[in-house]
Length: 297
Length: 316
Image (cartoon, rainbow over the protein chains, first blue to last red):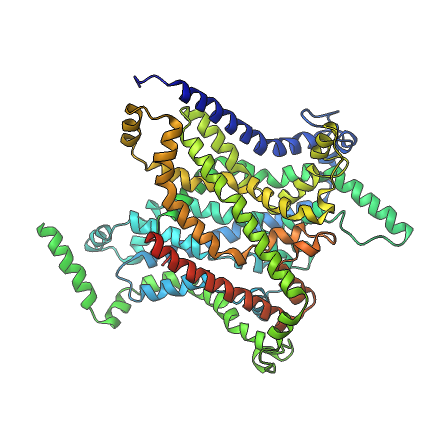
């Protein structure tokens, strides 16, 4: 541009860039700290001398962590729950959203009302708990895959997408060519909606990987614990246990705390690894999803 | 034009087809929506039916229907209990504090990002500030405890280096609300800027050019062009957030609770969990939950009406 920057604007730019830079530091530092603490000597970390650079590089935490079977069981469980849950969720959501996006559907408004109402009113925690129990799903790992299968919010996003990207004319043209509804869904709608499928995969996948609440409610067998519950035990419960009474219990408690101190940094890194790996991809589609969602459906 | 009128006829013709014919013609569409329909029925509508236990003395052995009715007993017990006032207060205050602290910041950051001339720098900042959104709550609180530990935490190291006394953040009830709210700001600010940034992208550049020609500085342009153009979005989001004041989430509060901060950290949802699931006082808990849900529902409906009147925008 030909217009020269005024002095005022230059000052503005400097302040603007600096504040944003400080913001970046505030966001990044805790994440960075966990990384350097995870490869530092545990004693140095505990004495508070690790601030900007790793001290006395040691991989003791990671090696302990490798031998911890509860973490790996949790990891495996979470991978299974996330993969199956996301797969199921995306299929159900996409097909329902496609159906509800078609204007010719008789009873479309009723069906939308049926779904949307649940966003505003629910039976609550206890009636749901009783329902799940009555279905015999308590302590059944299936519950973690099934619960949260359909998020009405995500369904509305997908429906908005279909409404704006699959015009009725397209459907009519396909129909004239002898294409049935199901064919149209499978051969035309799905291939044209890779973007929204990616959005849904990311939304459901990240939520599923990070959730602990359903597992805490419905799973009592530790074999079925997802990673987040294992993490909760390691990160948050080592210091909240009941006061020990016997000498053996005290020793045990101290041992547990020492162990937790040692592995907690590594465990944060390892547990966030899958999210970290998909982050560039996930970030892009999260943004896209929020934008589609902000257009009223 | 001819084509368009034909289309209209065709669509009109659609609607005059008898219902049973339409049902038969579109059976595939119904099949596609069926799984979601069944899921919602089982996990949302059956529990709504089950909410009647709030008016009963639910006994697992008898089931929902056979349990004896008790009328408003459970509600009366809740309102008469000394916890009631504290719980509602804790819930509202935490929620309002969170709203006040976390609402304006994303707007400011979005306005600042929008004025970044360097696309690379803007992208870099965005990439960083979205990241905390992907961290799980368990890890977030684990990290807070690490950073704020009384002896070894970085924050206390900094405080003592500056000559202050170390603070036991998790061991003082006064800190609970600040920790809850500001860690939430840390985690979600970046992500909440997305919606404003996309609204700002819609501002026409001609308006800015005209303002530049007239000698408006960047700051003036933010104040008189950018800010007014995202104001409608902000108003809607604010109204919606107010509608959710009483539905503050369970997950994070529960993990942050300990015996010391309990007087301020016990909110309605954590109370329901403890009374209902841990103490198996199902009916009482269901009553508290129903009370909370009805307030949420009424709040949302009224706020939605308000939003429609103020901005012409509403959720339905």
